[in-house]
Image (spheres, rainbow, N blue to C red):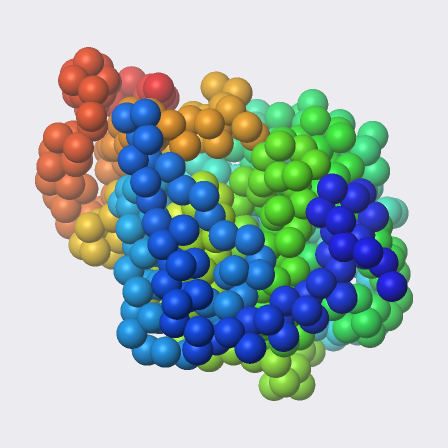
Length: 481
């Protein structure tokens, strides 16, 4: 049995099955220990420090006690604390993005994904560079500025050279006032050399979902293909960091294994990155398994209900206060509305999970990776967020200014994020309103911008932001702090 060591670079030592099982036993034994639960909640509360706000977060064992707790009033305290932490570090900003599927050719045998190579019914497709261009123009014409590119694992059809060529194409396209300013990458685990190539290509965050941290389940769920190698997959983030990518995104596919096990493993992975590299994950995603071409989610008997899902989101926010949290259009409008308050800071809008889907008038289903629950347009999502009091942000400034990794985290921890992220959100929202919004959305947005200007702490920053908003009104684009 491998001994637990968060500083180890060996998968089974920093994600120790023995430690997770001991954690779950401890959590179950203490789920009604009100004195301990109160102490854990107190530890997690934001504290004022050096003109900023500071949070210690929670370790996997402390957070697991809260997850096991079923005392209604304590769960409400968790929700309230998650809202408080979200407001302290991310305010009411919600960053917008869209996935772009490049290819669904795949050599893996993942039993929960319709891209698996045994699937003979799905329509296989790989975008040409001209098709990439057309997809990007369609996304720009909606108003998107940030993409997450997705691809199946296939060294013949989707080699790293193809991914790099697509990234170059995406960044090169300037259509009307549109531009994709940040490309995040969600592709299979690869080598340090290839991560260096991705870094040199100017990617934002490298995202890789673990799917499940339970090794025995992992091997069964990935019976064939390169992804079958649990250690190689689980250690990918360390190789990405070694390759110079300091913004990495974690996630599990909830529903494949027991959620309490996954939750502990996810936080242990975040603790490992902090212990080894000095900076935790830039983002954590929380997808749940959904119906797809030849995939029936009911086959997997570890699904979680909406209340449990909300509790997980709240506790991720409490445990990793500075980490961005992502929820996709896998989830319905109602679920997204609930968890945005509890800690989610990034959402997708108008997503199509099929290869080439954005250029089709009707949403194609023959090459989708999963069913989309929230099918609204980007304009509708932006309007909805503003009506709820959130600021839809299309900002990519930190990545473009080199504020990544520990530099972003120090900015977040110092509280200075309000003096750059807040005005950047308002300026990029103004761009959206001018170039893409419907009249109703524009009217709501203009009123929101005027109200939110008053929440910029520094007077000088506020004045510069006002000047830049005027310039955007007059046709100039791309201002940032």
